[in-house]
Length: 194
Image 1 (cartoon, helix red, strand yellow):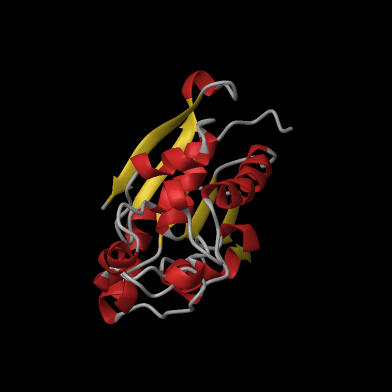
Image 2 (cartoon, rainbow, N blue to C red; image 1 turned 90 degrees about the vertical axis):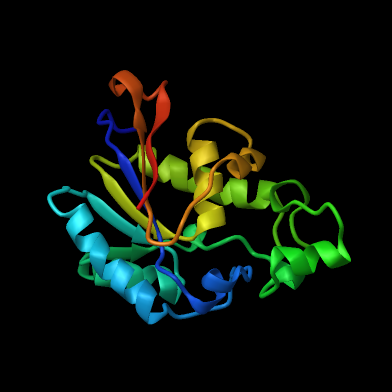
């Protein structure tokens, strides 16, 4: 484990047609809309002046394109564990559509048939947290909402289901870090900044 403690910057990808309409977009590779691309370009100014030791992205084109338009494409390392939640048979459906078939369904509690449960996403998040704690310096991550919410929960030592307590808008920036520069005190420094 490295001795340095630094902030972890999380960026949710820009808008896609499916994110704009509330469709669950896990492994489908949906491109950014024109508005999503404009918002991704706007991230450059918001991230300007920050020194990042590493830049990581989900393998999805929406995350990689957001990274590129924000000015970090040349430094990007794709990490498969940063992929969005696998929604299985719920891929492409909206929550109201799912609730018609399965009243009372909650993603973080119930997971997805033929896809991931919260514990599955949590195991991936744990691998990312371990890799982050081994880094020297700040890390910038581009990924998707539900996975980043699980990542924040696991960063804090909470069960992955507690990712339900966080929300993320497209092209938002969140920052994880440590209180008192102590690895024993992980905190959320900023959340869902637009």
